Length: 291
Image (cartoon, rainbow, N blue to C red; front, side, top):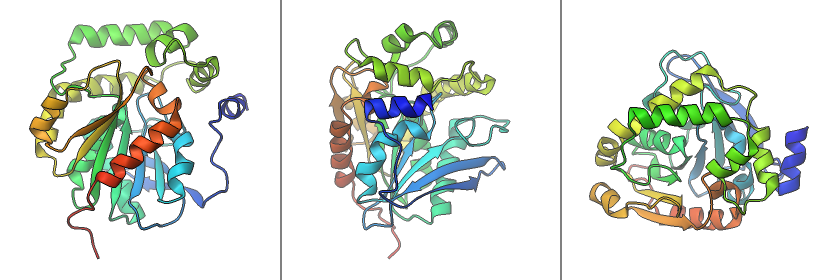
């Protein structure tokens, strides 16, 4: 109830009955259950698939469902290990997560999709796009992987984890790490309400493989992609557009000035939706789309 009250306070209201919606399950290739929610009806435009980040779940996208469900079918996914999806996976990888997204696409029978991935979800949608070039018309990376040349050292990863462990439910640390000094207190409290009391053990494993993927797989994945890539990023970390365009010539970026990491999707949501819609409209339909 506390989370629902906070949602109402900041305008992140739960998705109501304005459009058809249903919670569904698909089965990953390793047998783990994938829970996902479908909003809206079949439309002429692509299915918009939202993929959350580390320590998040599909509800983090709620504020963006309504604007897109009025003209598109919208899908929000709980990746295995998060939300309502299964936790029994033995081999946590970004490649497996990419396959999970394609499993959901297949379960829907979709032949035209745009994938939107926040934070860790950026890696996931790239892996999914690599596997479904006949269906995915574009991938949008939201506030992570700003520089394909970025390398995360073992020392950085250890320090990052230690900082998360030490400040997991500290509101000042949440503001500093994922918001800005100007972010409303209500959003900081909402982020706190969505965090479990303790970090599930598999989340630390997933964090490690996420950074390892960025070190080892990002550039080869970009080189192998057959679909457009774009980004919506805070201006706090520069986006290396030149490096992206070496691998994806049509790469484009939209900026969310002055916002923190989570603030990119939770603050100024109307601007985010306008930017995302521009990117969706700029992507050509899949080349091999069934007629």
